[in-house]
Each structure stands twice: as C-alpha cells, then as structure tokens.
Length: 292
Length: 278
Image (cartoon, rainbow over all chains, first blue to last red; front, side, top):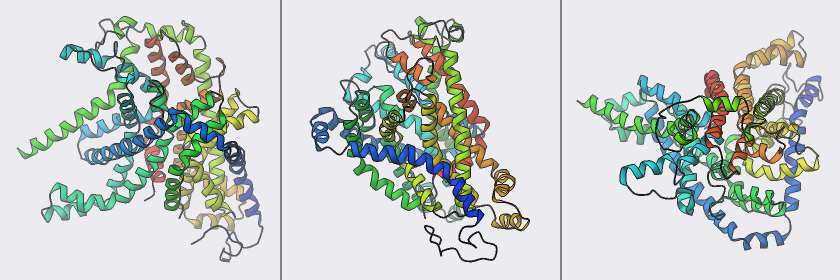
C-alpha cells in the first residue's frame, strides 16, 4: 500500500525509481507535474481561498437569510437532489436492464438514446422551453386539439416550473447514468443468470439476488456523485425558467450566479458557503471511495 | 405466445423511451425547417418545409446573427485549445504520478479529485472574481484556462487509472536500454496510452464546446463570445426569432454529436471505466 509519499516508503529495488533521493527521474516527475500544480494554484486554490475570505462577514448571512428568494432556493435545491436524482437513478437502473436485452432494434435505440447527453444543453433546453410555451407550444396546442381546453401555463407556476426543470435535468443526464449502470450489469458473469434459471428463479428473484448485489455499490456511488453535480446544475433551471416566475424556482447554483450578476459577490459566496454542509460530506464520501 | 408477450413488453418500454429521447431534438429540427408562422402553428410536420432559415443564418441576415461565423470560429478555437492543453497537462501529470511515482503525486491527485467534485457552478463565482483580478475578463484565454481547470482533474484521473494498468516491465526495459524519462514518456508511454488520450481529449473538447455558464460569465463582447452565449442573447429579446434560434442551435449541436459518434468506442470504455470505480 503506497500512501502519500514518504521519503522511506519506496522499497529499494535495484532498478526502481526511488533508488537515489533526487534522481533525474524525480526531477522530471516534478517538472511534468508542474503545469497542473500551477493551474490548480492559480485557478482553484487562490480563487477559493479568496472567495471564502470574502464570505467571512456575518452581515452577508443576515442579509442572505432576509432575502425571501434564498429560503425558496434552499427548499428547491433539496427537492431537486432528493426527488429528481432518485427518480433518475431508478429510471437508469430500470432502463439499463432494458438496454442489455439482446435485440437488434434495442441496440439501435441505445445509440439514439445517448443523444440528449451528447448534444449541448442550450439548444435542446430552449427547444423544450418553447414546447412548453402556453400559447404557441406544441404541447398545449396538442392538449387543446385533443380536449378542447387550454393547457396549463407550464412555466408560470412555481411547482409546475420546478417539476419541468427537474424533467429537463432527467432528460439530459439519464443517458449518462444508464450507460454507467449498463457497464455495471455487463460485468456480471452470465453463468450466474444461467444457474438461477436452472434453479427456476423468477425475473424479480434474478434481479434481487444476482443483479442488485453486484451493482448496489455502483448504484450508490453514482447516486452520490450525481447529487454533488446536480447541486451545480445551473443550466436546467436557468435556461428553462431563468429562476422565474418571480424568482421562485431558483436553486442555490442559479441564485449564486444571480447575486454575482448583480455585483453582490459577498452574497454569491455566502450562498455557496451555505451549500457546503450538503456538498462537503458527499465529497468526503466520494474521496474516500475513489482514492484508496 | 409467451415470446410475443415478451416482445410486446419490450416495445412498451422502447417506444416511450424513443419518444421521450427524440421529441425535444425533433422539435429543434422541425423549427429549423419551418417558417415562423408554421413553427408557431403546433403542426408536427410543416406544410412547406424550407431551408430558408439556414440561408439566413449562413448569410448572417439577422440582427442577432451578425457575427455568426466569427462566434462559431471562437467556439471552435476555444474547444480545440482546451482539448490540447488538457491533454498535455493531464498526460504529463498522470505519467509523473503513475509511472515516475513522483513524490507528492498522490496528494496532487487528491487535489485534482477534490476539484473534480466541486460543482462547476459553485467554482464559477470565485473563478470569475479571480479572473477579474488577473485582468483576464473578456479575453478568450480566460475561458480556455477556466475550462482546462475544470476538465483536467477528470482527465488526470482517467489517464492515471489507465496507466496503472500498463506493465512496469516496459519501463524497466526502457531504463535498461538507457532511455531518459522524456524518451520513456514520448516513445513508450504516449503510444500505449493512445486510446485513453483520444477519449480524454474528446471529453475536454466537448466540455468546452458545450459550456454555457463560464462562457457567458467570462466573455461579453459580440466578437469574442462563443456560439452558446450568442444563443442566450436571443432570449433577452421580446420578439425572439425562435425559428432562427433553433436553426443556429441545431448547427451548433451537430459537431459534438458527430464527434461523439465518431469516437464512441473510445469514449464509452474510457469514460465509464474511470467515472465510477466500484
């Protein structure tokens, strides 16, 4: 187990790189690491430290908590990560089972299925935005033609608009997580399924006793990772609702950027600091998992 | 009978999945071949499909599109620059950490992982502030550097995973033959890592091409913004020419889709293997 580099941790092998204390190999290693270290120091370490320093005033937080938009954004963010992510991951788990079925047409469908993830967000989200237009959008026109009644004003109601933003998020990132879970399912040896068939297992039992135990860790890791990233999902909300109506559909990511645009950097940083109690434990968990 | 039932059940899943996936993209395409009136009519296929929108976009014949070609070029230059810079930085770092076992490499990998986990929209605020301090706001280099910062951690992680799998005997053999670290890097390491390098380079390129938030924060002049920022500008108008917006959007969405499908086999194995190690 090699952990963080200790001077004596390298076992002395006759030709190993750790033979001398500062060989040309170590010099080259340091040189090759330098570009990333510089990028990290200049564009992550310094900005984050400086940002946290800007967020040190207690007044920023009083001001933030007094802003009614903030409370709503916290609630929206929590709904987003609890409801949207779990829905998405369950759908991905289900669809990964569908896509590993051996059929030619399913193979072709899986090629198309990737599209939402492969194309940039802005054109497709704007396309969805127009589909939801109450007067001219294709959805409401279809509702009118079928029922003779006006459809809802999709983006003008807080909960409806937030649900739509969550659907956009699911639409966009479902293919990626399905792909990950397909990879997980394909790693399960087929003999396990054959053996369980011989034993007369039902489809549910096969899932419960063969598939699930093999993909459970992957599923959990994916869910956590998706939660962290979704906290920063600016596009789904901003491009669909712009935070409206009346700033009711903001999530912490869009709210932070809104303050930034209003030139209130202290408040923007304070918003982000308020998200850290959710982000840091999840990040800690992921770091523990990945950096062994 | 039982077989027919299985097929029916598969279709019952497959058809809704296909509609769900394709509807917004089809809608985008539909607008691009419709006149404004037909686009707003809610029809599922225009009575008179037209390529007029594309001609307007290509000839920059609308107020919003005055700099279309320039903005497309900006997007391209920035994406390619991010792709190559990320490749260079990540490949050297992964080589130093995984093959040379440079001291402190593990710590730096952890820093990179940590950066990878910070949601990009959160990093945007301090990054914007810092770019202001560095005097880089409104320079395309700001966007390039920001995107490299975001793409590099994952790139390093994927390349490090892949290079750990290369047999160490290769390095030993090269050393016995008297190879310098740089020769080992260029002549042994890079060629063997080619598939992962393609995956990582494509990943960084697409990330930069698709980026909206950082582009719109860091750039604002009509002549130096990228295409997504220009698309965002359409939104601020009262009577947005939606059919032109969608046409431009479709043109903008095609290259990444094409690149993705071209490099699909590298992307899928390269990225899924690194993304979640269970």
